[in-house]
Image (tube, rainbow, N blue to C red; front, side):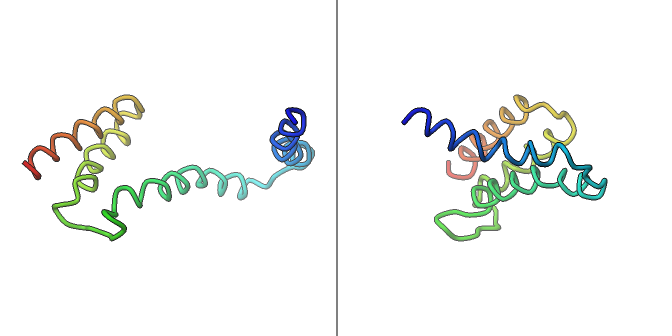
Length: 101
């Protein structure tokens, strides 16, 4: 069972690497592939930031949307994941206290 699980996990990762390592990938494809991680991250974060109880909320009561603004600025200018997470958490807590009392 352990060997089978190992193969099922390993082979889908190894086969594309083995096949693609022999090919020369065009520069335009490499440039396009650089957009995939930010797109995936945005797709994962957007529902948590924009939605409350399954509905899109774009007003002052959306604490996570407001907290995302300083968090985004810190992420862009400082490029420090620890500081970004810290600013996001502190912003959410402070806004929770201010808005919900």
